[in-house]
Image (cartoon, rainbow over the protein chains, first blue to last red):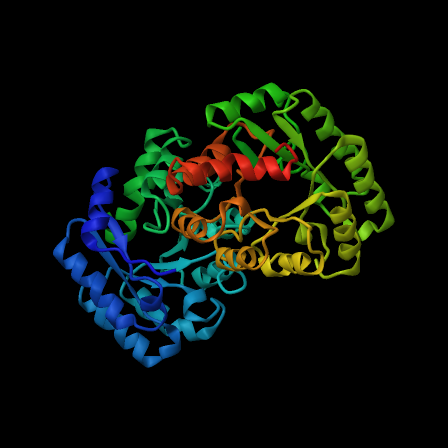
Amino acid sequence: MTYSRAAGELLREMDAQSVSGAVITAADRFIAVRNREGNDLVLTAAAEHPDRLFAFAAANPWYGGEAVEELERAFGLGALGLKLHPVLQGFTLSDDIVLPLLELAVEQGKPVYVHTGTPISCTPFQLTELAMRYPRGTFIMGHAAYADFWNDVVHSVSCVPNIFVETSQHLASVIRTLVEQIGADRVVYGSDSPLASMAVEIEKITRYVRRAGDLELILGANLRRILWKE
Amino acid sequence: MVIDMHSHFAAWGGARIPEDTPQRTLDMLKANGVDGLLILPLMNLFSSCPDHAPENDGIFEYCRQAPGRLFAGFSVNPLAGGAALEEIRRCASGHSARVLKLHPWLQGFSVSSPEMDAVAALCRELGIAILFHDGTPPYTHPLQLARLCRDFPGLTVISGHAGLGDLWREAMAAALRYPDYILCLSGPRELAMREIIGRVPARQICVGADFSTSEKDDAVLWFRWRSFRDACPPGGTRRIIEEETPARILGLA
């Protein structure tokens, strides 16, 4: 399957759902191999819409020093965080090859978003181990480890203060459980658009998380805290 | 009649809340534009379950209170050998059950085991479809399950999650390879569902929420059907997926 998403199309979907801002990353081959090309695409989109689109950069750890250089370049051009996808990039979170990228992100105070939930390479406790190793880092557990690691998420997040859980893909009932058990201040809304519907991803939260304060945290305040320490 | 083809009896851990009645389940279905429901065991799927008949019978009794709307599935553990085969015969002949639910990693068996072959052969003989949990390694890759279609032609194998979020492409490959391999959309999200619906014949697709009857509300049921209908517009294809495929599998057509 191939797909593409231009900034204008994303902004229209955001407008339709009253979403004011979005973290964007390049996808698929741009995460796996053509990092610089993908990073330039999202950095350009973010530069054109600085109040609405916020770029996270991708760098494949297997490129070694070149990956670190690419991440440093992207941070210099305005990327606000690092996106890791162990499945597409062919490594496990327990492999030391990822450490140089993490060290750069932590050093520069940039959050690290990690696709999680796919065995064997990106499980919740693997991310917890990294969060323990880098207590000054900020990590985002992408997709709340969808699908069958839902049992692990609460335990893996509760034992460290520096992991947020992102909501896309997972069931509405699981998101509600996370809010109840780890607190709304650790849960961050994400849509995974265009793979999933932004409308469905928002409604699954607003329909089953009822407290206005919780919604404010999940739908905006937590991300502002992650990105800008607000 | 729109039928949800993947739900479970009671709740995770086996507890059944007092409010869990057939009427409450029907009301939740109605609120989400669904008319009928296939209910599968849950407690029977744990490998520690020593006796499958009590939960199977509980589901038969539950569904008897809403005939034509609630349809009972059942489960056995293939590793039980002859006892499993006996229970399959009892559920098929005594209760006209049409769908056996298996969960290889919870139940601790491999689809490639000889015990599975005996179950598959009997299910084919009795016209019973097997709905598997799928989408999670090591025991439930879609193509692992699909080998049963190759080795037991005529057996209907249902991929209970259509590969979930990680293995839906593999599930699609299995369905394109074997016409009796059915994808139950209960995991892939909208873009993946559109791809599946565009490539796999609708007669091989159905929808299941994977909710449990004792959940406190319709959060899971709502989410799955809202997501599916976002991906599949009204029309002939949706009708086949929502109505005709389930009816054929359940022997209603």
